[in-house]
Amino acid sequence: MLSLRVGHRLPYSMSDSNTTDFTNPSTFVLLGVPSLEEAYVWISIPFCAMYAIAVLGNVTTLFMVKREPSLHKPMYYFLSMLAATDLVLSTSILPKTLSIFWFNSREISFSACLTQMFFLHCFTVIESGIFVAMAFDRYVAICHPLRHSTILTNRMMAKIGLAVVLRGGVLVLPFSLLAQRWPYCRTNVIAHSYCRHIAVVTLACADIQVSSYYSIFVLFFVISLDLLFIALSYSHILRALFSLPSKEAWLKAFGTCSSHLCAFLVFYIPDVFSTVIHRFCHNVPLHVLILIDNVHFLLPPMLHPIIYGMRTKKIRDMLLRVFTLKRS
Figure 1 (cartoon, rainbow, N blue to C red):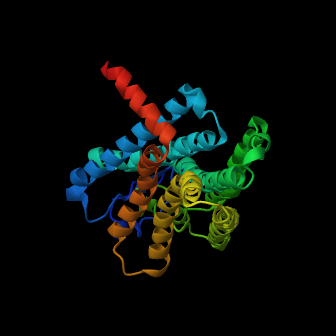
Figure 2 (cartoon, one colour):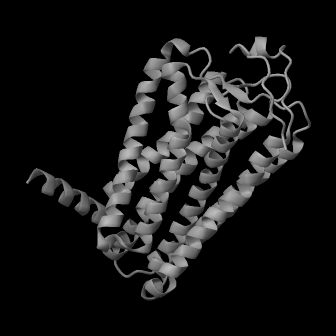
């Protein structure tokens, strides 16, 4: 168990803090977005707007699926799981980021930092698993429509949901356990606005190759496995679509997949872009990297409800009905 003792309070300058000696701080200091401190209020406006849209959209999605019996189907259950995951993801980072922007509240306790790290990475893996489950649902609906209700029963849905959550928890838990083991003896200043795994463990004065290699393993394991399953599902879906007799039938069947494909791309493209920037673009300023990281965790939760609201007829009809009742 990591022994926690309060060390010297460090200034927020990385260059100064690197010369300070202490052992295992009870708190970390989040750097925020360096060199943009004077623009914090302006930066917080789009961040706050994106978060508000994300919360409103995802809460509305959950409310509609719960309230409307016609939406009690596998596709909308998975959509509810996606909405709940997006709420956790955006809420795990933005309140603390806004507290830095508005109140200069940079301190975060060691346990809170590890908790934030766990939820952030765990629910990222869970969300990726939900997209795999949604692709499987579309595969069954299009390739085996007569068996859809017998294959994706409530019992099967519960098993899939549990498997997705357990996979995320099991894969990500070692991040926090390993980070808890390392001694931190040079600086407690995290060069980020939230407790990103690699930003925390690089502060340890120990050989962190285990943490580094394991994070790379999880990244490639999750991405490669999930993309493989999604690609296989859609290869079968496309084969079934091309066998349909008319263009109208093709468009109608493909329309049921378009929302999933858009939401999938909105989730993966910013994630891949952020990963590539971090791994290969070493000349990018730190504040640009931090802003990209924050936006890539806020953009999908904001856009997913909009995508499903625009592309799914039942959700559009439900929204129109709700607003009509409120006006009358």
